[in-house]
Length: 77
Image 1: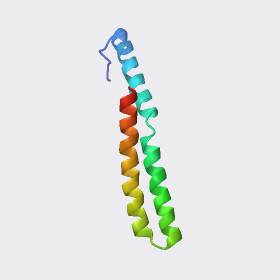
Image 2: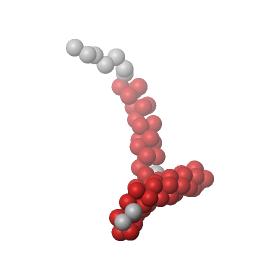
Image 3: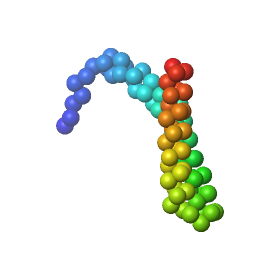
């Protein structure tokens, strides 16, 4: 049988930290920007008949956009 040795007051102190971490992850749109640009590159590759270059362009521009969005979010804080 596992017994939690922490007091109830100790558990209440940890809750705001967890909520702040979840909020920080939720407000970061950089992953959506990356996936969106990657899909645009892949779709363009399918349309032009050159899938591999389209994927690489999507990845390249996606990583650049991800970096820019992260920098913009850091400067706001």
